Amino acid sequence: MSYTIILSSVFGAVIAVLLVISSIISFKENEPTAAKRLLFLVIPVLLIYCITPVFIADQYYYIILILVLLPVILLLLLIIPAKHIVDKSDNNLSFQIDERDIMFSRKELKEGTERYEVYYRSKKDILKLDNEFRKQPGLMSPDSKYYSKFGFNASDVLFDVIDMFHDSVTGDVKTLNEKFNENEYTQFVKNWAKHLGAHSVGITKLEKYHLYSVKGRGSEYGDIIENNHEYAIAFTVEMDKKMLDSAPKVTAIMETSKQYLEGAKIATLIAKWIRSMGYDARTHIDGNYQVVCPLVARDAGLGEVGRMGLLMTPKLGPRVRVAVVTTSMPLNIDKPFRGDSVIDFCTICKKCADTCPGNAIQNSQREMINGTLRWQISSEKCFTYWCIAGTDCGRCVSVCPYSHPDNLMHNIIRYGISNSRYFARVAFKIDDFLYGRRPKPKRLPDWVND
Ligand code: SF4
Ligand code: SF4
Image (cartoon, rainbow, N blue to C red):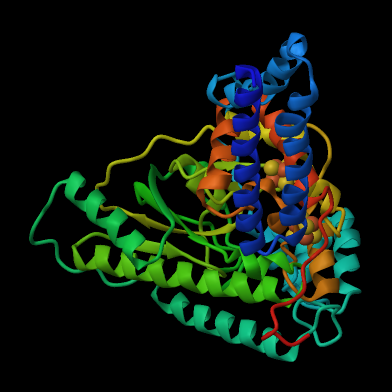
């Protein structure tokens, strides 16, 4: 037997073993289609590399060599950096979002009230769009598509408990009688947040464009937002992949509300600790924000903002929730994350846009919006779908290739994507092959009632 045949057979056997391992991992990740497809690939691999070479005469050894070289070239694409092509555009540093324009504020406007009249007086086009969601059953309504008595009540309870944290977004600051340096404060804050359950933590200077201009929710509605803190601590908490697999069914909102509570709990504990050390701090948690969390988190080095307008983290993609604490405590800041590979991948992938049941995510290139080059989803279409489904949907987060679990198999792919735009183009096709272009929502876990 020639060396070429031995080389090819060993190579084929290694690939086959890797495919079987990947298939087992996919099966454990509740991805039976991907598991079957990976297993199915073992047959052609064995045929091409281990069986056919035996029947090919030695003088055609170069055919075998080419076959071996092709996957090796693919692997080289993974390790040889190839720059991602991205149109750069700095943020418009002076633009601030008015919180009264976000859907959570608009949904609270009741016809016949002064607030409703004042808001829509000069916004007839927005009123027309908002009337669409008002025609639907509503978020967590018994008439909504994915109503579940158990699940909706569980989420309701979680949101009630989050509301209890609103009383301590601010608080009394103890007298500063002992000073430490910023290294000591930073090290403790980051490690403590992680110990309390944060997946990633970053710190940035608080910029004007991080802040909403005017408050749009709660008793401070209409007030100009003022926050003189110098720093913002942003952190993420992970959303459970299996709960999101069934999105937009009820598990989506059960998981979101659970992680909003986690975020609120960690932020409150961090802020209270800071106040106990003699510095002011304010939490920014579900239902009570002064800041636009994805922008703060991006500038704190935690990720990039992708096609669906959410923070895309390097290890969990958009499968996170973000909370923020702003403070006067002196801290070391992190470098902002400028994820060219994320923008580049989002430019070609478009899976969220193709899958969105509300048709809310644009399929096109980024556009200049208020001085910043970015994608913008139609928040009206998205929210209208929420009011049909009864949940906060999350289908886009569930199907995003970046949302796969944080393990070796997916991290190798993530490394390839961040390293090489050629590999990114191959990876996006592999993701479609394994998981489907428009994956269907999975069945609810057995313990959750429909
Ligand atoms: S699904 Fe694709 S296009 Fe959408 S955010 Fe994820 S990577 Fe970007
Ligand atoms: S949450 Fe649902 S409706 Fe909204 S953008 Fe994502 S997929 Fe579309």
